Image 1 (spheres, rainbow, N blue to C red):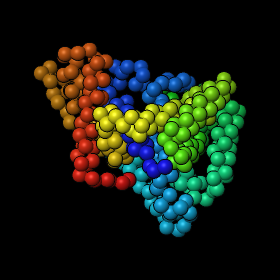
Image 2 (spheres, helix red, strand yellow):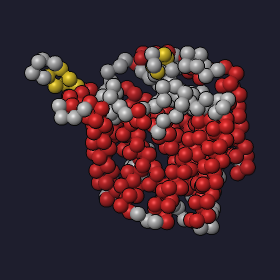
Image 3 (cartoon, helix red, strand yellow):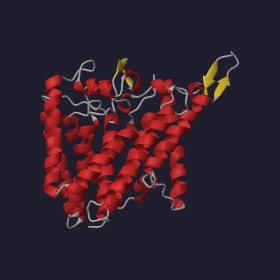
Image 4 (cartoon, one colour):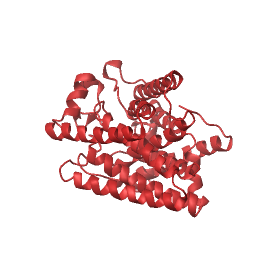
Length: 360
C-alpha cells in the first residue's frame, strides 16, 4: 500500500493537542481532562506525548525506506546530527527567555527525550533484523518492568528519580509536585524508545496490508492486544506517564493504534476533508510549530503591563485577566489555549500553501 495520509493527519492532531494542553491561560484553572494524572492513572492529556513518540516512529518507517533500512556511515552521521540538533533546541527552549541561570537550567525535556529515542530507535531499526527488533521491544518492556517492580513506584522513592539525580543533579531537574523528579528523565526514556519502535512496527504492518480494509482490521486487532495486555499488566504495574511504565507503553500504544485506525477511516475510506484537512495542515511542520509555539508563549514573560491599580502583569496573565472580565476563569483559560491552537494553525496553513517544509 502507499503512504497513508492518515499518518500525517494524526501527527497534526497530536501537535494541536500538545499546544492545547501546554498553553492554558492559568494553570490554576484547567479542565481535568487537559491535565496530566497527578501520579498513577491516565487522562487524555497523558496520551498526547506518547502519540507523538508513536507517530515519529511511524515517520521513520518511510524515512529509512529510502535507504532500504541499511546502516551506513552517512545514515549514522545523519542520525547523530539530527539527534544532537533536536536535543540542543530542547535545551534552548528550557533556557529561553534566559531568566534562569545555567546552574539551575533543566537539562531534559520533551525534545530532549525525542532526540534520545530517535537516536537509539534509528540505530535499532538499521542494525537489527525484523524479528530481532520485535524481540528488542519485548526485552525493553520486560527489563524495565522488572527493574521498576524491584525498586517501587512512589514519587519520593523510585529508581528513575535516583538515576536522574545521579546523572543530572537536583538543580537540573524538573520539580514535580514539589519533589525533584523529571517526567522526561534519562532512565524513563528507555521504555519511550519502545513506544517509538512500536510506531515503526505498526506502520510497517499497515503499509504491507493488501488494502485499506485489511489494514483497518489489523490496527483494530493490534490495539485490542495492546490494551488487554496493558490493563492486565496494570494489575501489578501502575499506569504512570511520568515513569513511562511498561503498562503505560502498551496502553498508550493501543490507543494510538485506535486513533490511527480512526484517521485511516476519515482520510482513506470516507475521505472527509472538512475534518482531516486542518490536521493535515498542522502535520506538515510538526516539530517546527511546536518550537515556535513554545517560544511565542515564552515571550509573554518578557512583556509587562501595568494596570490602573499599579498591579503589573506579564502579557499572558494580562490576556487571561481581560478574558475573565467576561467569562469564568476556567473557560477563559481554555479559550486562551484554543486561541493559540488557532493562531499556530494559520501559521501552519501559510507554510502548507507555500509548500514550505522546515525539517528539524
